[in-house]
Length: 113
Image (cartoon, rainbow, N blue to C red; front, side):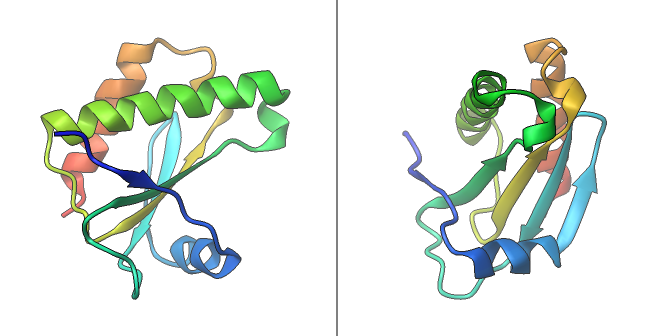
């Protein structure tokens, strides 16, 4: 079953997520929080790659990789749909192996309950 992923759109949502809980690893920072008014039918998640990481091509590559990993995670592990997520990429995510990033992100999603 394919899960519909919806991204955050309002500045207020981003600001409120940044004030929520977070998990850090060497590739990413994951902010998560229960937002009021969000549907539990969809996975509310946004991917952010800052301009200092590289040009638009590099940033989009990072976001495509992360989106693909999250799609796999929804199929293989149980992700809590009550939370909204903001995934902030760090600079070294561009040079690392896909499977290393995937395993690290899977471990972090399992920690979130």
